[in-house]
Length: 355
Ligand code: DP6
Image (cartoon, rainbow, N blue to C red; front, side):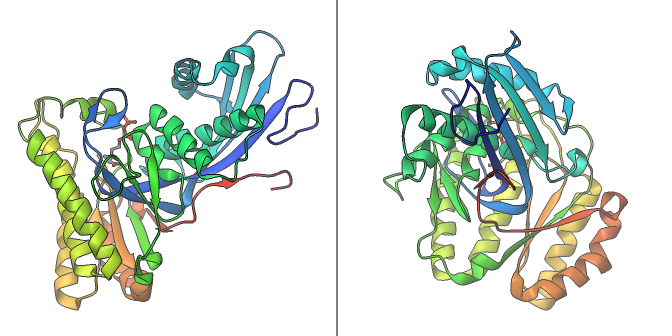
């Protein structure tokens, strides 16, 4: 069979995309309605942490979905089957075909990087390309990215922010008329160049099983005692962070980013039931980052997802000092001395034949 990317032939159609993971600076925590965020969030995409997915539609046999993760049949297939089922009203052609999906990550599963963002991002890009191909629509249009973002959100909320180069914003805010709860929008205009040199050293404190799934965690915000103040804080932090990005205010950037990471963990510590997802080594790293900043005045800060790993954010001009600091002071607190060297990235890429 000849592989035809994005083209229907002999009832076979293949689409292949690479989609990055992203790290939130203002955190999404809590949902309303179906997969809509309680508050707006703002993130940037990574360069080296990505998923590559190929979706092939065919009419051979009667197995609806074959899903291979890194060459082997994977449990994640069940989540994808539910996802495809859910999308049939929007993409009626799903009912007419069987699916063969291959996926691989650029990072090891144990790396503690949220793989659902890049996985659903890549899958949604493939589905959107196929839909555009069926409808004869141009994939080089803004509508393509908005639809891919919307479809990926249905699979995993944070993945909808992985669709653009650099920074993205998801959730309705009065700052941007074009913002919405269904999709993320790109944020590129007017940011100071220092932020295009943003680096992310992912310090792997623990790569074990998650103590609480993100969907269970989000649910705990439904009747959280601090729900209203958290929503207000996130809106305020979006405003402040956006202003810091426009004006090049690194001090404000650091203040907002760390406050968001700690608020996310504070929400988990004060929900019912509560969760403490930081480990002693996470705290040690946080304290050392703060001391190093105070001593050297180098602008660096930390953020975290709903887990114990630390994302140490810094700027390219301080690369050698920060890397020396990581090696000298932080690696001792990482599991097996393991960390990942990443940076702000260029967004998704369509994989063409020969790549
Ligand atoms: C803490 O996107 O994983 O990383 O929508 O249920 O799939 P689901 O949740 P998910 O939540 C991620 C939350 C977070 C913060 C963030 O990325 O904004």
